Length: 435
Image (cartoon, rainbow, N blue to C red):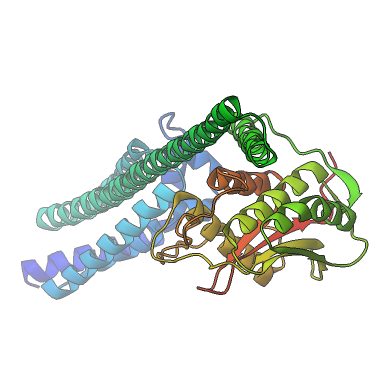
């Protein structure tokens, strides 16, 4: 027999020996790892989870030892590489530290070295060339497994770290945008305050010069009312920002509360030459925070009246049938609708809330997942020119609506076909969890 053929025979015999000793090798490896104080994660794994891809890699090692042609050896190496990468991925998913992955491979290499040493000791006539070739192939196996497993583990770590950095950057950008939106809302509110104060100041000056008259007293009264309303909005916004607003849940008749609100606001609509209607079942017993729900309705109605020149506003309510009991309130106007070519901070939030509310309708649940729709949302500041009178600061008023909806676990939807008016639809729970 040629020396080269003798080496192949010896390597094939060693491969068969390692195959017969597979269980003993894995047991010795497991024992060595569990006694290693630097490898603690393995203690939480079952035997199958711990062995993972190692048995398949040992199969590849045995094929490598039996390979008599270069292509067979290359195929075995490719299998080892693939299994080693999968092993590194699995160890990362199992929560291993990188040094634990390294120590496992060092231990496996030691177990294989012990087996070869015992095998060679039991066969004193084994050719030195065969023993050297065996050591070379086993060493290549161990180095391939170690390097590919650790490399894959490190790739996953880098990927995870990059994802964390990306998430932090996105959160920071979102926080910055929220701060910008908040600053813009306060800037608009300050502008409205200055406008109202100017009206009051001018009317007071006219009264000082000309004396009181019904016309100027009425204008003064509207200005003071606007100031009161805006200051109330600013106070509420500040309390919401500070987290001081809480919901007070009690049973109440939503139909009676909304009917009363509409009756109180009818003179405001009539002063504008508009109608204000309310429709719904005569009784609607629900749980909720009556004050905050009425505040939501009031802000929506006043906003609708402010932008409607002809026609009027209709407020409706009803209970929604479904797997989860809910009820809805709609405020619909006959105004110009909202233009869709720009996106204010508030309309973006309401656009997301609209998609959330639609998801609720589809899924029959109280909360949905707002999608990342890139389509520009309709803007609440792009209506036709705002008419004078009524109330300024609608932007912050509608921002309060959105925040109060979040506080009450309610969803808000915005429907605004161009030229066909605007509808706000708010969906509330009928019952809230106790405690």
